[in-house]
Length: 309
Image: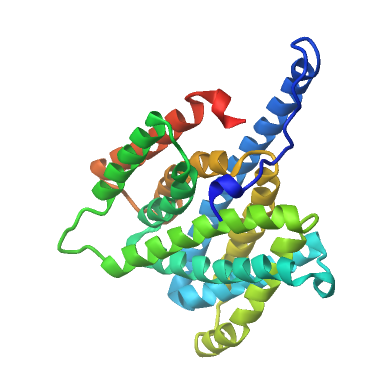
């Protein structure tokens, strides 16, 4: 599915005289967009704080063990919130649910492996290439092309080869980027094929089932401490349940392209949270690269606003 095939979060307002419907609809549209932006900001901050909590549990549980606990916790919360009725799902509804379940399982594991190997700021910055690609793929504006070039240059700076470069960690972060782009498209699809939060809730449950045997084996060989288990549970709430719910609601208020571009604030959140919580310091060139990414996001979002509706 291309981005152009994804419908708007809200129906278009039919043409009307200047002093009629459009003037009345504009304030409602603005409030809807503002609500979507607030949800995206809250989702991003919650996600990065949760990722830092997960990193604190890595020494005891490892990335696989933390992801398993995260998936189980998130599935329980999403199921209670969405109350899905899987027996009533049609084959057409099950396909995106199963796709999203696979994305959940793969995205979380690949991101945590990357965080463990290259740090939170770099891992999330590379993961952001997924939604940015979705955001810019359908663009025909010159300013968006310039933003893409700027972000690409910033990513090159962040991943510049050195004798200590962890290519496996970078590859894992890029896999997470592919998954995040898929997550946006599939979540948008579920938003119009299943009512409420049934789609993400069902996908979270399937993903949790996939991690039952692997997670049980890891926890058997690596018994968790109370602190590590608490960090993993917090990661499940902050990096799964809260963002998933917020993203579903945001994608019903803003277009998928706007969502993808705006979420480039995540690298900044990740760098700041990594510094404050984990003590992971970026050098001056890396901070400059993160700043360029956020600035490119700002330009892409604010330029030519009439194209954003």
